[in-house]
Image (tube, rainbow, N blue to C red; front, side, top):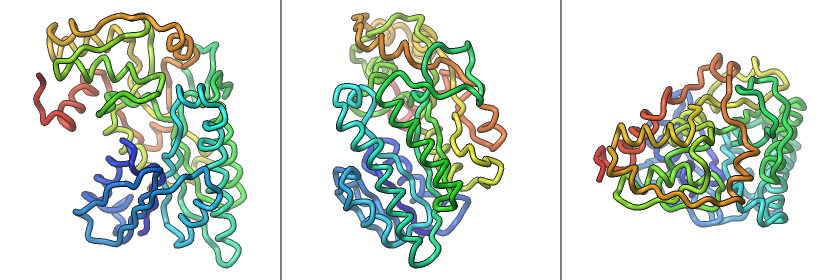
Length: 328
């Protein structure tokens, strides 16, 4: 199996590569080739015995997608995106990468099928930002897409395109609406949701963190470990039951900021929670207020997608995967 990962240098992309190298292809398939692409050259997975290509490319460049699919990868993971805060600040860049880049990929796949049939499994990372307020207390699978941000709009349009190209038999698409991934390792990025990770990640290593919103803000979360599991499962499932609705809201944990902090205290004590400093940011608060809070993802659960069941598990996953099982 040949697997292409677009956005392979990002946090989730790197973890996906690690899992593929350790476990093989989706559903136990033999993994023979990896093509890893991003705007910075992805790290070469030295532990992989098969064929590897690492490419420094920009998906917004119309010449990139044809190059990526010319060897007809069996499974394509499309993870590349400009994150929410940056997409809101840089309108043109957000559309160029999040929407036009995805269109370039779809049309490059379509052109490959002219010479001989080619229908790859295309796993697309969407977002719960495709939904907009007002929300019910819990969002079911039939809630309408009405995004209130540029990022959410870009992802919603991509979902419709994925449905249509799958309907036409040009790709075998699965879109997964990721919860906010928490706790993200590494340094803060430009995502408006970054503070959900910051207020846990930094205190776990003895550093201060800024909380820009009120503690009653509720949101939908899953760990990086769960996100990789979603991707691999999406690459392996029978897409027949999806019908024309190829995009799914993923399972996760609904928690308020206060519940996050309570979980942190249970795991790491008050020495950690005392490092969280409240500094309100109206801009971030306004963006987050337009996001959904809780889901009832029955379609995804019925198809076998799994996530954590509480926030303590999310914190423990971070400690195990990033801190060697120890905290400061």
